[in-house]
Amino acid sequence: MKILAVGRNYVEHIAELNNEKPDQPVIFSKPETAILKNNEPFYYPAFSQDIHHEVEIVLKISKIGKNIEEKFAHKYYDEIGLGIDFTARDIQSKLKAKGLPWDLAKGFNDSAPISEFISKEGIEMNNLNFSLDINGERKQTGNTSMMLYTFDYLISFISQYFTLKTGDLIFTGTPAGVSAVKIGDRLVGKIEDKVMLDFEIK
Image (cartoon, rainbow, N blue to C red; front, top):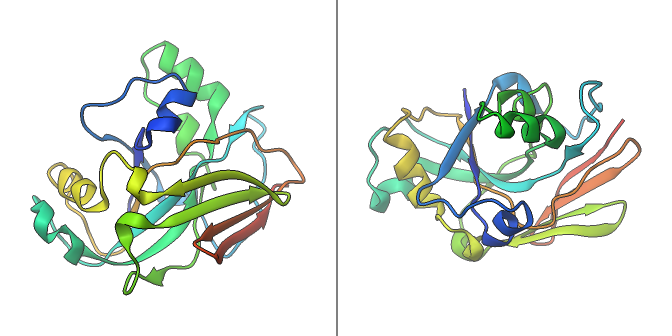
């Protein structure tokens, strides 16, 4: 199982980090050891002083595929979930300044909390609301209509480079509002009005 993630897929988030708008999807990966399940607490790592939350819709791949045509991409996932792409922003900034890969800033242990997965049946995938609250305060609000690249386009694009296998996860990008978390924070993530994530920073 692998985790593939999409950077810079929401225009307002690109702007808040002063990044350039990409001419194709920005793809990075996280190792399986990044996954944090069942609303287990996230333990703040000692190597960073600036961990940021990035809430994202996550697709779970349901069958093997490569070089998938966009018009068939919807057949390759049946379920969606909510995830947090925790990012060590201080480390990422240093790596980016040197033109180095982001792996240490993105792929550390437990940096990918994921919710349960729910069927996409009956869900309008290109007009889907999701959000993140911290300590009862709304921090991020997104709608999938705001994505630069749709779910189906992402699956098609990624499958040109990586064979997708059953169980693979695709983090599809975060909207504006990313900010630092601290020990003691409680994060609650929702898809529409359904609570999908509810865990603490320790």
